[in-house]
Length: 284
Image (cartoon, rainbow, N blue to C red; front, top):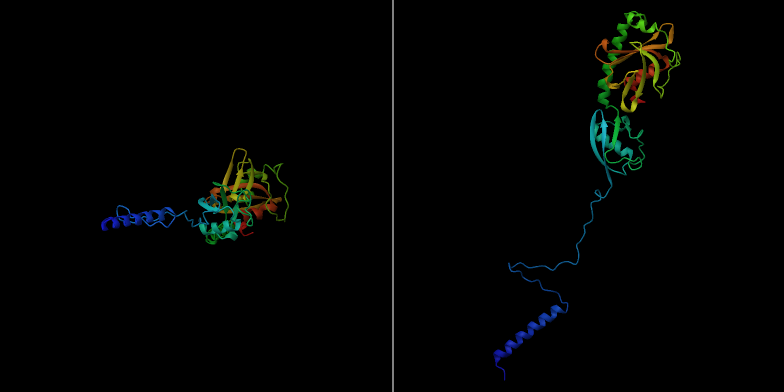
């Protein structure tokens, strides 16, 4: 007959076997204590995803905005419209959308997306225009200079009679000069205005690059690319006995010595040239 101590020992072994069997048959495992006393938790069946950032999932394009000799790095979703880009430009430059001319392979359409007009990483987008403050700061001095020049001209003999101009005008009208219309105002032609003379009697042509805000003065030897904002004033006068043509000067510096003279400018383009160079075209 087993003693009491032997019975208790058999009972403890039976309880241990039941506990082990319960775990092996799929019962919930009891967390085990590690050697340092902490409790190890059961591993989850799989990781839980919180979802991606919706903004980071958008396809972005990085490009540069170039305005007034300044460059701005821009990153926008490819599905942004031209109107959205203009708002971004306004934020960066202070230039109101209505006064922006945005150029990328032509004039930027506001209703199309950057994807549709094929803006790619590293592309350059040109912006032309002036803020309200810039217009006020630049226009007023130019108008003042114009008035002063007109008053001074009234005191002098006509320009076309002055010796410095006679040596060019006496050569007569160039054979390849463009046709003229007296008493008519026309928009600038899409082609350069050519067939004219400069002060040295050489042939000269004028090309107006509105998208770059530049006037290109071209001769046989070279082409000067002049920012329109740097031109202080434009003056002109009809040529006596040929009033359908004008002689015209662009003031490139602070004094009359900086005038660049052009002779035999067709009269119908004179007002358009002045308005374009002096900045009024921005309001069209």
